[in-house]
Length: 114
Image (cartoon, rainbow, N blue to C red; front, side, top):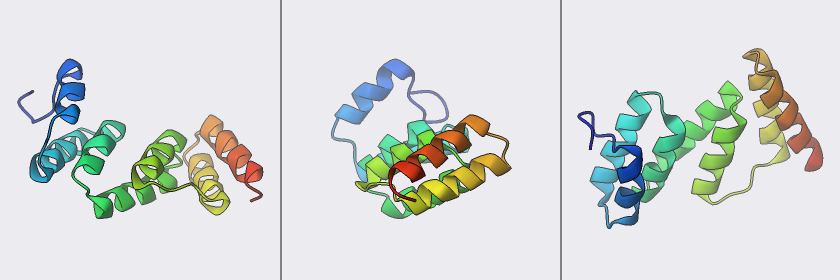
């Protein structure tokens, strides 16, 4: 593993497939988060069963308008994304100038009847 607790890309998959204890998984997730590598942290947060941290990350992703991260975190939490959530993602994306994410989130909200 790298000096900051982040496994290199080749080791990442192997580490996730091992019987990693929750404390170690959470430490790796926090290292990814500290580096701004939120999507990579999701699998380790899920492995650590850190639902509260996943919920917080979900809220951050919605506010930031990050369609990809909302999908990833929602999947890790085992839930579908509601139309109202996609509408909020669209607002966050538009406010951040992420036009493509805003358009995608609006499409997803509309597809769910939002």
